[in-house]
Image (spheres, rainbow, N blue to C red):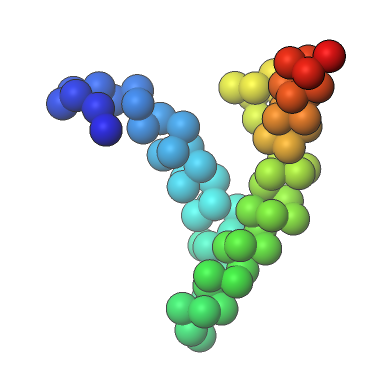
Length: 75
């Protein structure tokens, strides 16, 4: 995916995984893998993408940012 030593390539992914661990996973325990998968899916689809604001994209939620991008390119 990238050359050896390109640490910034993974910064966004690492930030995402840190956020999900801090805000969701470390706050509760799961009896089964399926419960964990369901909770993570629900968190991403109902909070992280549509609601949570991100500094790297101008303090918009990912959904809002994507909608603005498509509106500006199709206008």
